[in-house]
Image 1: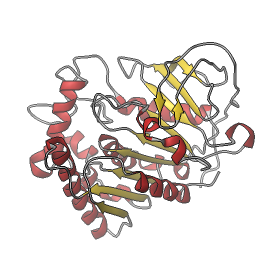
Image 2: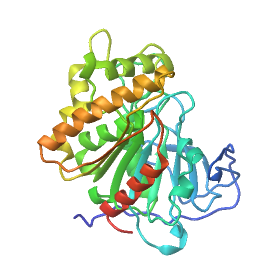
Image 3: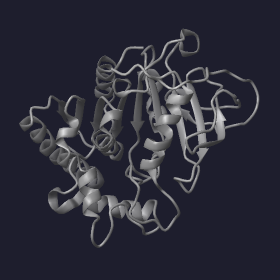
Image 4: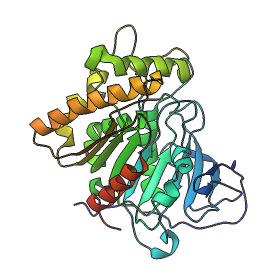
Length: 329
């Protein structure tokens, strides 16, 4: 286990400065007026807005050449972070797709209450309405390089500005729906970054059923994020990129990781979106699990009634498993 970590400046609270928009979620007020000076720019990120008034939830918005607009991130600190002097493991938690999904999604769902008293930092970044945690093949709306933003910029920025373990056993990645796919993709593609990976209703197979998930990634990104551009290319896919991103083609990359999977078995038959999504999630996760099993790679999986939504009880179970797997605070 590596013991080398980059130098970090300690966090400070400051009383005055920039204001951030207020958003109410299940955990209460997300942001009000405050600024701080210890958390700074770096790794291609320039802070253009921030709120550090809340003892646990810190909000930042960045200008970055990787994205054509200013993406945000919520950083949820553990209770006692400011006085403990300890370092903490980190969970990167990714939201799903849709125009109502962003970096505030899990605050709306109740992440503050779910993590109360737990010794872990949770990082919740923007991922685009249909960014698919990827650098797209083409974009007609400026740069939308989410993979670059998350892996090359945000991850080292977090390690430089907060008391983390900047190592394999110090990080986990998880997500819902599109974010679950992003978690599976990043955990395999950047093997040395994450010791635990979780997909809550996240698709795990890009090529099955004539590439339905890949087609959906292209269609949704073209409509919502890329102004007609696509993640994987049309009419011909960038085959090397699909293979590199496809969890079922990266099975060995999950060895020696904690793997946690959730899929619903009974989507709402009246809701076509719910049915198409969770039916494909379930089939893809079963394919993925079979391949993991054949390779002798341990994994925890849950098939439960219902469709395409976050299951709070399983998220909490997953969170305890993540903390159990990672280096202790």
